[in-house]
Length: 219
Length: 333
Image 1 (cartoon, helix red, strand yellow):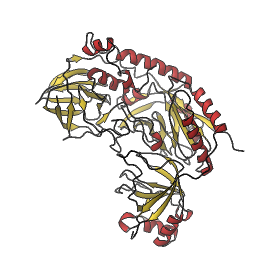
Image 2 (cartoon, each protein chain N blue to C red):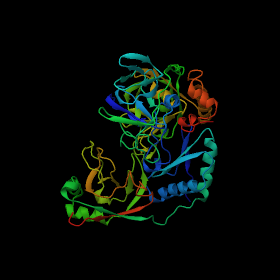
Image 3 (cartoon, each protein chain N blue to C red):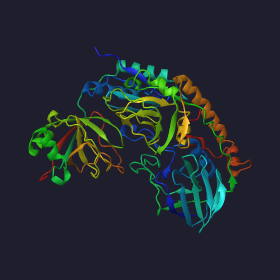
Image 4 (tube, rainbow over the protein chains, first blue to last red):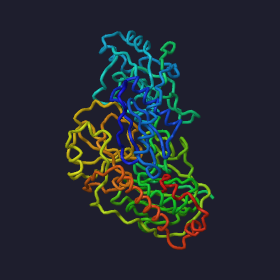
């Protein structure tokens, strides 16, 4: 028996359906299930939805509907929406650990008490799951970093990492889409672009997708 | 006809904007679009750019030289003012700039204004919109000194002073709805939020506006990243409060104690730096009622602010021109 979700107002034009304050695959699956159910059966006035780790934002037009109507429609759908436990599509992401592409690899390995090669083996053996997009365009938050490599963020963000940097913090992993400063650890780089601003399908992953990293030859 | 305009000087927040893009927040892409949606809609109505695109101005204003082709333009927003070759045109206005002339827009006490041209601005579209996401530069793009804007299908316009909307009282409180994450604060924090005075800071960009006031520190910082929306009052671990704006991050790990109501978000964005103000907590239903009144007043203003007998007004009255209210982002009742 799972607890019912909570409804939290976000001003007059949105609400959050909160399934529990944890980064957890089962909770995220309920978020994704409700997101899909709302897309398939949009209540009147629905504008857009934003799935996150453990909550779904539902934006609506307050000139067309009311928060109470949208909340009731969403809660009714949580009764029938079936969490999709089937694994999402798997993406294979090429990664280079060459020194220039992995400026933090040695420090990550040292803190984990591993050799750089052992840290690479651990990282490659893990299976990652796209929980959500957030922060900025194309930032797909993945979970699944092996516990030995869990590190807190750096105290100060560092600049100068190219697009495609593979960065980790705690259980989370990201492939950057902008050359922004980051406090996460840069352990590799991929030529894959999660955000292709000119492409027909600009965002590579769907929430729920699986990701596996594959070392590039000679890198 | 073609016009080419060389940017001589542009403040760091100068961008191309249209009404914004929808449906991509799930991929980390906020709506973007104008910070002051009424001033933007007025500038679009006054010059009728072919693609509903405006140049958003802020700190530092803008200076440009017309290299080729005369073109009509409109300026609307706060108390920004225009001059051509040193000749003052005043605030909300419409005029023509000719080859060799220099158009200068100065910032006033307010923060945001919109320059529109009677023509089609050559600007990149991304995900169905020319609105610029300033952090990534995606969309129409940032405008910098040295850029040359190219406009096609240009027209001239009747010069006119335009009526600005009545300035809202600066003592009118800013409405908010408590939540979604007030549980991350001390129990008396919502009450303090609505009983103490805050100051609209001069620190702002398209992502958000800093608000100075009593520190309302989160009691814990273990929140998994949750979705965020324009208007959310986010409080960082050091107590700094920010109202998220058009280019807001789509999710964030800092808790949001409250959300400014839709009717008051743009007003708070335009408050001159240093203005003291207060918050007032209202119910979701009261916030929606205020939005309905606010939208009706804005719609009435947009139907009345152009001079009587104006060509655009005559066309609209003949029902030949639509889409002006669409510029408000579809918030027509």
